Image (cartoon, rainbow, N blue to C red; front, side, top):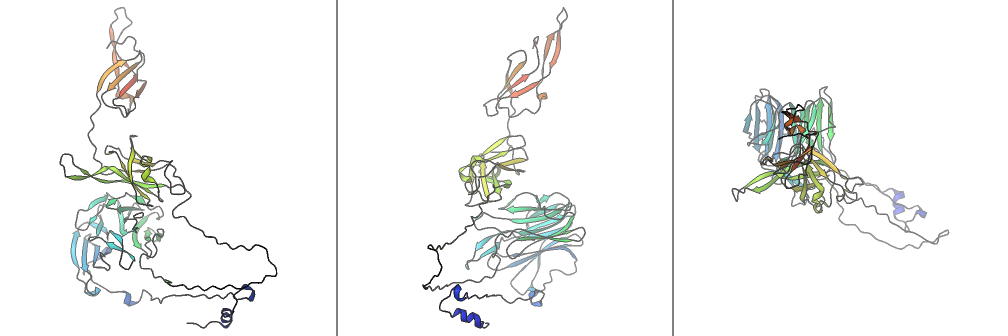
Length: 499
């Protein structure tokens, strides 16, 4: 505790604290805690995971299903190309841990291991990250394929070839579900850095990290104290770059704070005498309120992906399967407030210009994620364009203008649709023929799909019939929403046609 300066003490003791007697007592207080350099030996303990092997790539993940760590996993690739995964129970001193091998995979060049999980309120009212029971293992084969899956289960191919390096980290998630970065997988292909997010068990699709340097050769992903993700990327010249995400939830990772619980205020009226004054004395208070997430610009659709719907098998009542042809998640850069009331303001357009409009919407309050249910789009052709229409949607301050994004719909199972069959043909004059089908005609890709031919009398006196082919100058068809379809052919003049 430092002594109070005599001049400051005299001002504090004045009976009348006003500007006119030059009181204005002020005191600056700085509170800090002692800091210990991380280089001190007390911060580090050593555990021998394996002996007699040279590791060219390592990765560590710690299981935390309760309020403290319970198990550590280590994955490493040896110089002989063997991937080994071991674990140890954290129930003794670090130096005495017993490491047990749980997985060995040959012909690997790189690996990464990390847990998915969720955020929960603990008894202490702090929010903490709790992991799943088993971690995710990712590795690159000697052929450059990137594979991944829950440890000990099936490892799916996520990228087919040309992967050089990788790392994985769990991102932040809000307890309100309006933000979930998921399990993030970063990797390098051809010198460019990409990532994919596992959110609610679904991979959202490959995206490029455009801030990363060109000609990247190695990558490391970590979290800082406030749950920002930081990438350390090295290029082929040896230059090291650090890339940080925006701050999302400061204080969730054990940040210290000082809390004031009691504030006592004493007031007294002091008689003020004016020698020069105005008749009106104004006292005002300005309070500025920053509207949360109400940007003055239109919300933008960042990406979209289709997700599974549990559907009952009509041939086996009581049996359900995952159908990916009904629901799509729309992710915006900010919250959409009234999406539930306007499902038809969301639509899908496939590669053949077939269109589906939303039938219903699911959305948590103040969420950037909107889940839209459509009619069956299992027959959609990739790529699919997800569109949010203008007119009704807004963020609470600014109306949305039309915004769209393309995505590749996965796990679709096309259903059989019989081909349309002509049921009648007739001409309406000497140039136009109508062909009627039993089913709607959605599109006609080429005029070559129809041929008109017949026999016309020659100009000779005998009038012999000559085989004649006609060129289709124009083809048109009915609205595909009609119960059946018809096609009109303009085939040039065929005055003497004999069919």
